[in-house]
Length: 119
Image (cartoon, rainbow, N blue to C red; front, side, top):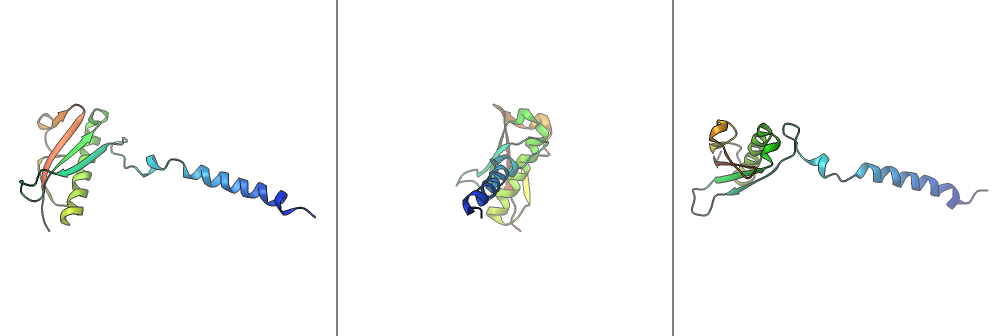
């Protein structure tokens, strides 16, 4: 009769290796891609003195893809307004549909400005 340790160990080891291979870093698989690229974007209120709902979105890495950076900025602005004001409606001062020559791009960062509209 075989010892439990010698028969079970290879199966347990194989299962652990299989599970660890599936985990990976996970960071890249959870990231949203825009135009096939990943962008770092953040949205913040303009300041306490500004009208409620005014915010800025900054997207880094615009040189990788202007179209992708625009969509990443749109997504981040929409997410910000939903989380803070319960609506995805935005009036953009400078936004994803602004003509390219009027966009604010400095040091490989694209900046949008808008106001969240309440439902």
